[in-house]
Length: 216
Image (tube, rainbow, N blue to C red; front, side):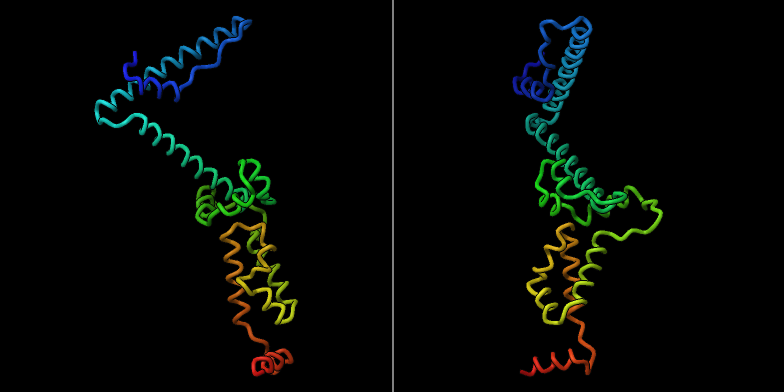
């Protein structure tokens, strides 16, 4: 018999009893329900005993302890979900799962899933699953995006390229919507650095045009 009302209430919250038995339940269902009920009562009694022992030994508040334990479980599950997101985007064989699909599965907006994936999660998954046994080396989404944008920037004139890279690559960012936030920042930073440092060939028409513009 649990004497402490706080512990009694906590046990009832943490280990709820099975639902009410249907009035016209068959004998087999009745037996299964009774077995579940007996097992729940036994588990409640054991949990209450553990709480009472902890309270007597350390004087810790059983409610706060229960909240702490539940928080640890939630945090562990959240970490696991982040690893699954990272796997679905960066490591899964074949086409990566879209952010919309992952968002629906997690009950979150696609933008939240995109911004939540960190490089640390991607690296952690790589360590857990090891090298992927692929028949051929596949280009990562980040590498593919980088190649596409380089092709785009190489095909425009200097002024257009400058405008595309201005404001921290604001005009290019919509083209990177499929990448997670950290990958977007890496791609933009590499493009800005690479193309800012490039100069047209000395004596070329583009070089003369640029020189005249700078002297004006």
